[in-house]
Image 1 (cartoon, rainbow, N blue to C red):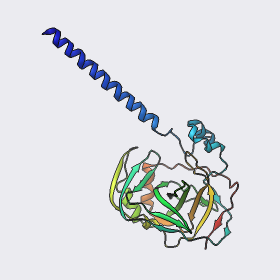
Image 2 (image 1 turned 90 degrees about the horizontal axis):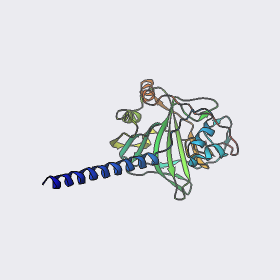
Image 3 (image 1 turned 120 degrees about the vertical axis):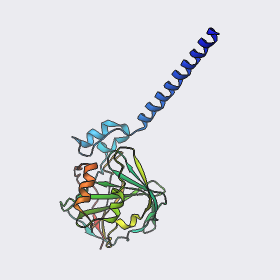
Length: 257
């Protein structure tokens, strides 16, 4: 009888040890899948990012980097930004750097005969892009991708003014810890846009890893308003993290309207 109990105990210990080992393997695998940590304003930012992960090599070696200061722009006959976003559920997530929003019902951006599917929007404080040296306290980047994988980003700048009702929706459910998320029942992404949609456009890389190049940027000329209280609420959760301005190397900036 004692021998049977002893064998049973050994089996239980072995099973527990096996389960613990499996859990540790899953945990370390999950850690390996996470992005290498990075900061916008790290010293020697480009070189710093490139050393964190081989996937970030373009952050240093690439020739098209953003954000930029738009000092001069050539007036051009550009296609209008035709956007269509479906009102519906959206997931608001703390991604470790900022607030990221993904919608269940995908929208799209049309530029002439090219179509880009909406992927997500996120925020920067202060704005990354500058217009003749002007920095805004907050900006939103709406990221789209076509079937070939080319990215098209629309940037909306926020200036101090009255409360922004669309942003209020997000701030009301803003997750407090990295990885936390909240599902909104209804969100209308298009409500973030100003009535006037003339824009600056150029091709540069992403300002964040993996620093993908040849991204089509569209910076709306008209900012939208946000209250000082909303700016403070956002910055309490995501402190000011300014991005270094990159030189415009190859592609001229064009402007519509």
